[in-house]
Length: 328
Image 1 (tube, one colour):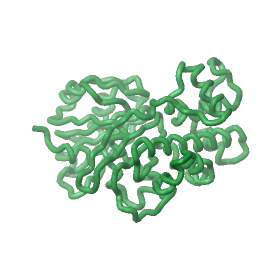
Image 2 (spheres, one colour):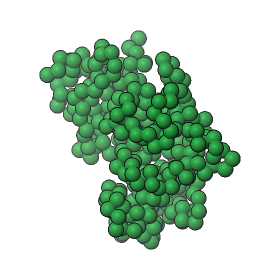
Image 3 (cartoon, rainbow, N blue to C red):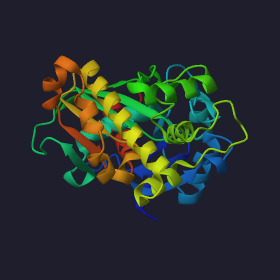
Image 4 (spheres, rainbow, N blue to C red):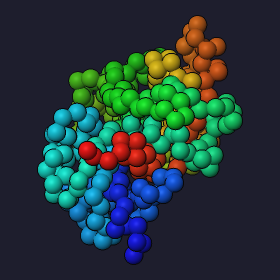
């Protein structure tokens, strides 16, 4: 056993589909991760059970932990947005025997990771890699949901603003997007951006373009990974239209977010987009990012980076725990 595991801190990134756990050594010069495990949420009844399983697997006995969750984190009671899990932070801390437990938003954690990312951890979609990192930095990305966070400050004085920007109302452009938005609204009563820019969103766009009735529960939705694979293979016209529309809408939302935040840099993260980087480059993503009327020229100067690090949420949670220090 790694001796550091007995004195390390527990780090977790809990999304709607997977629970990722790791340990980090608070005495190391830089935040690093070891004993990384990715556990399917469907195998566990609660976050506590998943955490206890991880601790049993590794033999770790942490006294501090930082857990990033895909939900708002105000108050003691936490309820995940895209998973039927809820917990009391005080009860979880006691159950795991922790002296300190920090709960942070999942894309807040990704934002904390941005200053620690190396050149190998990102792809430059636009701009140069040598520009100095200064806030504001918009961080967003589709996965099970759509995360949005904000990094402000400068080296040595970073701060993170956690947001729920993915739940803002979607603004469609053109007849096809209007029809897709109406399809989702008919199913859910409202169409947020997350309803479209997420794994489920890919399935919804595909169904709407395929002519599946919005209220139909008989026609199964295609799996998001199947849609992406079919689009990249090239012979499935609906899948290619779906992924192209997804990329275009992501460009619009990324441009809107950059304007709202006053961003000097936009960082795209999440588990979906790294699977089709060449398709994204060839899509209308960049065109729609810039399609902001009088502010198109302003956005021309905003670099766009794509995170390829395997676990930015875990890395960011480790950074956040260092930033917050020890409990009093």
